[in-house]
Amino acid sequence: MTAAVLKSADELETRLADWLARCALGDRQAFRQLYEATSPRLLGVVAQLVGRGALAEDLLQDVYVRIWKAAGQYRAGAGSPMAWMAATARYRAIDHLRSRGARPEVAIADLPVHAGSDDDDDPTHRLADPGPGPATRFEARSESEAVQGCLGTLQGSQQQSISLAYYQGLSHGEIAAHLGAPLGSVKTWVRRGLIALKACLERCGWSGAAS
Amino acid sequence: MNLFHEELRERLAAEYVLGTLGGGARRRFDALLPAHPALRQAVAAWEKRLLPMALKVEPVQPAARVWPGIESKLGWSPAAPAASTRLRFWQAFAAAATVAAVVLGTTMRTAPAGAPMIVVLHATQGSETLVAGLSPDHRQLAIQPLQKVALTPDRSLELWALKKDGPPASLGLIAADKLTAVNQHALPKDTKGLAVSLEPLGGSPTGAPTGPVLFVGELTL
Image (tube, rainbow over all chains, first blue to last red; front, side, top):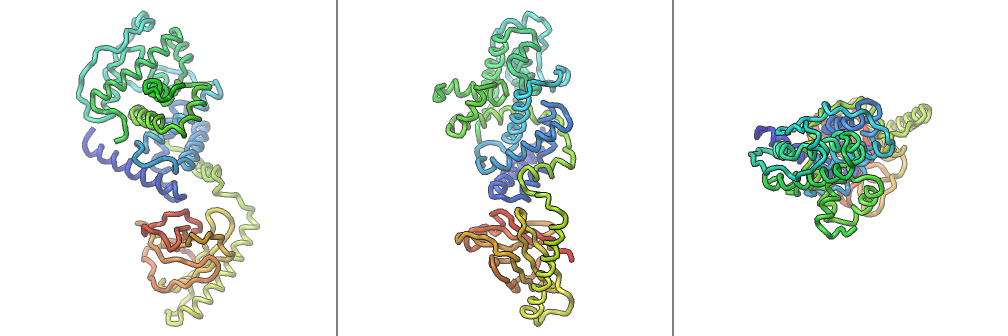
């Protein structure tokens, strides 16, 4: 990622924080600008989980209603506005998936691929969890690269479980059914995978804490 | 759940953000969040950590119907029956003509000849209306609420010129219940509309609207 792109990403975050502050004061024009700047991104996030179409757009409306109402609770400096809004979008979609119990068919091919992913073709690897893989050191020039790189260092089953949970909104039970693995193993993979991901990001200097 | 235990807090926050914290545990976690700053902080940190995964997802342009749907869910665009809208328009027009006459007759004795422009400002929420008369040279303006605008004693109404580009320019405070003549300011050249916002007593402390915008009107005849 070039410095110019990073700079514009920072500028966007600054603008988003400004718009959110204005939304908290009831400024509808700022809300409209916030919507214009972020809705394709947030609809992408929702559609990734529930599929494209009218349902995703209905959920997106709920997302922005929540953002408007919670803008006052969102405090500048509490984190990244984009992270907060993307998370708000994911939570709405996940609530929908959990409440309906119905979900689209999951195709692994649809999952974004992360750099450094080790193939886990041997099914026996899915049954045992040897814990975090060897601590691979790599240079990450951005947080995005760091997250991708760190996901790549995770053991295959951990990485797969986290990707299924994140991109498809699968629950522990659904991941277990999908991978044909015991529920207990999946819970362990997710838990240890998240711990390893955080440790790796901290080693790379990306703690995720509010700066 | 002992949420003061950092390891448990971290694990719950991570699985909450990932989405694998489900069912009753998720609902309890949601309920606990407002009262636990450390928990909120852990959640915000995980949201930030996983953001690059969200940004890898391909954006999708929403259909045009989505935005009006949001406005309607927020109760901003009550679908008023056409007849009553028309009635309100004519009431507003009649009042605007009166205001314009006042502007012409009193505050604009030295203004160049020509018809004043009438601007009707509709409430962003509710049905109240303000009307403004603007001199042909855009240098003098009078504005009047058709109904008294409910206002607590610690608040003021501030009038803004909305420009094609750039931030709104303040035209000063206006009365909530009677005609206000604004003749100290020239409207910015590219003014496309007028807006009235609710501000702290004495007006916006920042020079930009800080409160909700209560009334908006476009500069068209």
